[in-house]
Image 1 (spheres, rainbow over the protein chains, first blue to last red):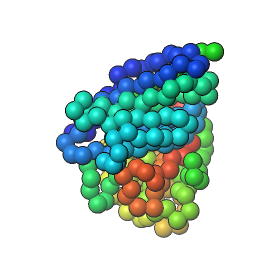
Image 2 (cartoon, one colour; image 1 turned 60 degrees about the vertical axis):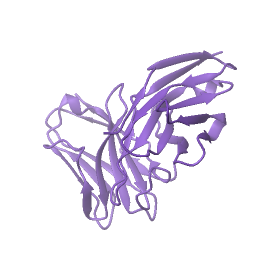
Image 3 (tube, chains in turn brown, green; image 1 turned 90 degrees about the horizontal axis):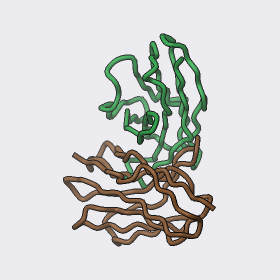
Image 4 (spheres, chains in turn orange, red; image 1 turned 135 degrees about the vertical axis):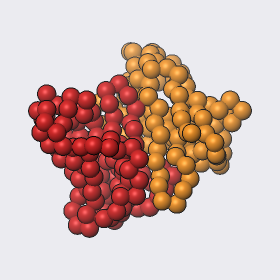
Length: 116
Length: 115
């Protein structure tokens, strides 16, 4: 079965310092992996996705993630945090690749706090 | 978000009442997904619908919950006889076709509070 584990429920950084949000996945097939961001009481915005092309994926707002099959990881990074990055981040894996359904399986989320 | 509209954004119901959540997908999208987010948790898949058809409802509770996506009008998620445990954010997403996530657009959610 497919699953994702977000290793930290909360991460706190100072503005201008690097961000690392950790995610490990489990999948019986070649997965598609995503990171979504959710600001308070808002919907979800896709940050980036991995679909078996380049293992280093660049997303919006300076975020990137590296797919490491040997470590079954897909950690999200950003070189320098900004106050506006404070939000909930979800690591997501695609469901089984069938023709008729396209379920997404979400991790439990990591809340990123950014201090001035 | 590319135009998925959900309403109401916030809904308060007493135990035993019915809750109806509506989702208008992006214009031209014929595939709708509903997800539920319980407090302090990630989103969990509930149901996947195409126009007039339920394709996958494996995430739907067996009782009290139903969903539809009629030929005309929005998709409706209906919860009968609500209980406190139904309090959650319900997110709708739409896509033009099964898309491995990259063209799925999420709405801003409907927050249900059961008192």
